[in-house]
Length: 99
Image 1 (cartoon, rainbow, N blue to C red):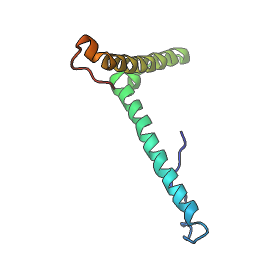
Image 2: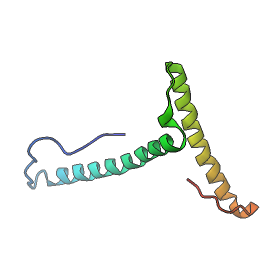
Image 3: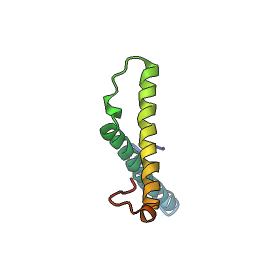
Image 4: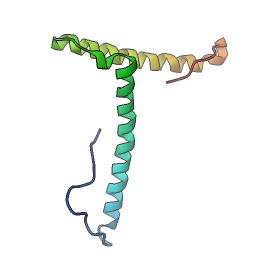
């Protein structure tokens, strides 16, 4: 993930030479924002739903284990919900959606 933003200082004057470069930078900043929103959303879900925000372990190893288990369960639920949604018609499963 790349963190980009508007450059500090006075904006460059638009000329014919740098017009394309400025437009490409603007598009890249916008795309980075879109990518970051999805990633931060998944972290928010992990904190709320899977207890990632409730880790109070004192030892480094225990904290890492808690984080790994939370992320494992997050990924496992996504895989299971995708499999269930694929087999929905085959086994007459209702009320399940892919996350």
